[in-house]
Image 1 (cartoon, rainbow, N blue to C red):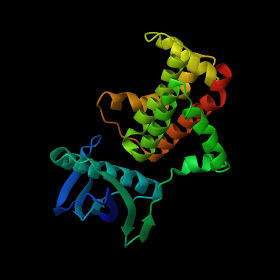
Image 2: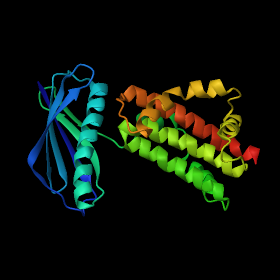
Image 3: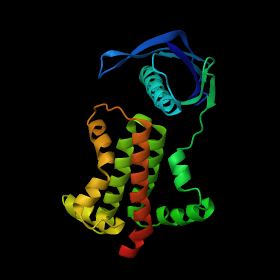
Image 4: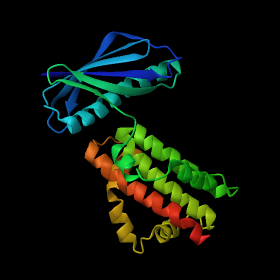
Length: 255
């Protein structure tokens, strides 16, 4: 067994919480029915310490997947506590330590593939451009706001990345429905307008391009659970950002 220590914090800090004695969990691999890892979680005045024992020899990418799984299980514990006491907690996992490897890694809050994708964009110029779109008096602009907030939720919630990215794309479909007075029941026309704006002439081309997004969205939107790796998240992010950027660049041409 290799032991990793994950450190983090329960937010907001003004809502003090302590969980002691430590909570022990055994996480199974559903595919093999073997133990994936064992964990022991303590929270002392909102400071998280989680010891994780695993047989896996984790490289940095695998360690990121492990961190996401650990965060998901801690989030579940805090969701149960919140269900009991009526508090909505959030958590951050900030650091992982292993003295044998040795590993002492502090996690950033950025999604590296998105940061790299947009590294040459002037933030102030882009912000002002996008604010003019979401601040419009047009009621349809609320769907653009929903799109951005869902993309942030996708970044913050690894296991639900596909769900939130797909809902962000669906917010753009809803924008098309309202902006162009397309009937509520005519979803095919709504999707066609979105494809026209983003440059996908054929329905199959668009569906094929975002298939990885829908594959990870549909099970979760119906209450199921699906395992997602960091490499799969990268693909979902990049394709979703492509669609959203294409829409934001072109939709005013269709007004």
